[in-house]
Image (cartoon, rainbow, N blue to C red; front, side, top):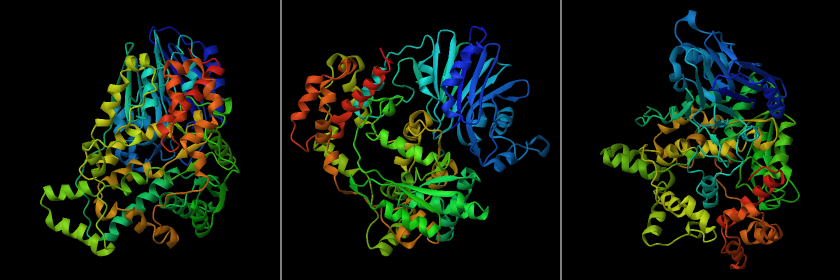
Length: 617
C-alpha cells in the first residue's frame, strides 16, 4: 500500500518543506517506487508510491481536479467501466486508462461527497477544496486501508501510519486508558475512533471527516441497503451470478505481473485461486501466479497444506508451504522485530512477519479469501422467522422442506439459543467472567465494569432480517480493525493484501440470497465452484485443526513460559493491572485459565517494546 501524510494549518501559516522531507523519509518503507513532498500555502503532504496495478495509479500526488481540488491518499477503485457510464454524457467522461485518483476527482466534481456512495474499492484519502477552504477525509466501507489523524492547536495532521503522527511536535505520548481497558476486556475497540494514544484518532471504516474553520466533524457516509430476498427462476442461476461476480472482483484486483495467492485448503481461497488462474491463463500470465499456504505443524495436526496442494495441482499453479520447525507464542513481542503500532492479540507476530517477507519476495500483491464466512455460513433461524411472519408457507416448505429431503436433516438454525439459556440460568463460560485483576483506580476512572456489562448485554443489530450477524459485522468496524493489522505499518513489508470476497458487489449479492439453502455450509460457493475445483475440496466440510503439540498453547503453559518477563513487569502495566492479583492466576488449576487471562501478558509485551523505544509517558 502506498503511504501518505498531510497537514493543514488552520491558522493560515505555511507548512515547512524541511518538516515534510523528514516525514517523507520516515515513510519510505511504504513506497519503493517514488517519494514526493509538496506544499501550498497552509497545506502540505508526502506520498510514498508503490506500483501494484492492474488499475492505473497516479505516481505523484496530489492529483489536481481543476483549480479547485487537490487529492492525495492510498486508493484503488474497482468497477471503473460502470462508474464511467454513470458519470454521464460521453464528452464529460474520463478515459478508460485514467488513474483511480482521476476517477474519484471526476466523481466528486459531479456528486460532491455523494461520490463516496458511488465508488467501489479500497481507499483512504484526503481531498482539499480550495474554494471552500475545507478538507474532506474518507475511508472506504470495509476499511483495509487505515487513516489516523491528530488535531493539536492550529494544526490538523493525518496519515495511514500511526507511528508517523506520534513523532509530530506537540503530540502527546500519553496512552488512551479507555482503549487499553477495552483491549484487556476482550471487547474489541468499542469506540472505533480511539487508538492506543490519547491524542491520535482513527477514522473508522465507512466514515467521512470534514474539517472546516478549524472544526472537525465525522459521520458515517454509507450503510448497506436491506433488500427483498432474491428470487430466480432456476437454482443454477444463483451460482452463475455468483461466478460472474467472482470473476469481476478478482479481475479488478489481478495485475498482469507476479501475484501471490494466500491459499488455505478451504473453499473461499480456493474459489479466488481458481478464478485468478482462469483469468491469468487468458492473459498468458498463469506462470506469474504462486500459491502460499501457512502450516501450523508441529503445533497442530494441520491438514490444510495437503488440501491446498490438491487445489494448486488441480489448477496447475506453483505452490509453497510456509512452515517452521518451532512455533512459540509471544516470541520477541517486546523486542524491535515484534513491536506493533498498537497492542495485539496475535501471539505469533514475529512468525507472521517472516511469512510476509517470503510472500513479498515473489510479489507486492497478495489475494486472499477473507470474508467468505460472514454470510455463506450464516443463520437459518432469522429466515425461518421472516417467512413465518410473512406467512410465506409455500416458500418455507420449498426451502426448508427441500433442504431436509436433500440432506436428511434440518438446516442449522444458529439462533443463539444456547447463549440465551446460559444467561437465563446464569451459567457463565470462563471467558464471560469479569476479571478481578484490574488496578482499582484505573477500573474506576474508565468505568470498566459498566462497559463490560453494556458490551455483554448488547443485542445484535437487527437491521437485516435474513443475515443479522453478518450485517452487524460489516457495520461495526470488525473488518477494518482486523485488516489494519495486515497493513505495511504492522507487517513492516511493502505488501498489499486484496480481498475479493469483501468487495461490496459480492456482499450486496450475498445479503439478498435466501439463507436456505444457499448460505448453509457455503452451498452457493460449492455449487459455483463445482467445475473449477477438485471434487474433494468442493465436498470438504469446514474442518477444525486437530491438537498436536497443543499443550504448548494452553494459557497456563504460556504464562509459565513467560513468568520471568511477568516478574520483571514494566512500571506502566501496573497503572492498568493489579499485578499481584494477576500473578495469582499462575496458581490456578491447569485448564481453568482462559485467553482473557493472557491479555495482560500481551499488553505487557507491547508496553515493554514501546518503553524500550522511549515512546510512552
